[in-house]
Image 1 (tube, helix red, strand yellow):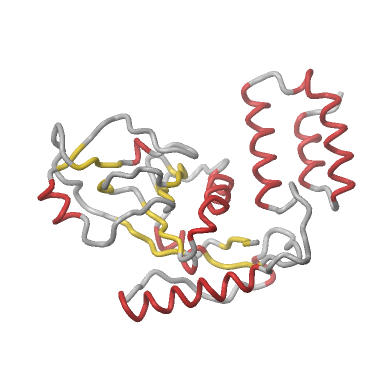
Image 2: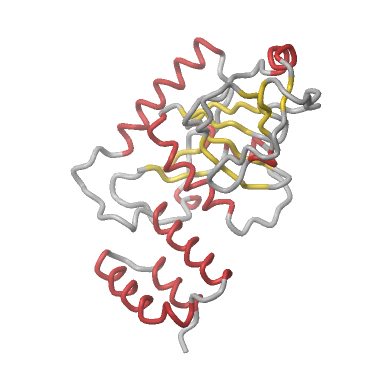
Length: 243
């Protein structure tokens, strides 16, 4: 009997579109008998997610604009932020070949997370919570892929003005929990203004068009994490592949 692990490994190890298509057919033959538990279905979901961030779910078109062009635009935005806002969120530019842990499709590029976004991170004591006022988003509100408005928590306007001094989250930014729990991520879709509690990092992407793709990358990277937390400085150095 073929195991779930073997079938899913054949998908991620597929070398080309033809090989991947054949392995999908093979997987479908066993789907009714193997993918019957929450654990096996979750494993399949994570495999599909991994295939997406590896660029294997759709054909790679050599005529598409290469990632290097996008990274040039991102570098320009970052330079402007450094000059105008004294942006300090950064990471080393160089990534050694030995650190590139996935095959790189044509037109893709490697870059560290800290060079893709401004990090907005509030540390210290969270402002006093009240029954109504400006919404407060805490780590408890951030799920994998979405923001849950429950529990409803608020701070006063005065607290908001004195607390939110490092930047304001915008729609399309990505929120990430570096601890308690570690690794939940969701894109901002809240239209009203809101405050960020401690233990929530906001990635304000230098190019808004990458937000959905980077959300997939962050969720995929968090899968299987056993650590209890990660420092923002470590996050900045994470290597990501960008198409």
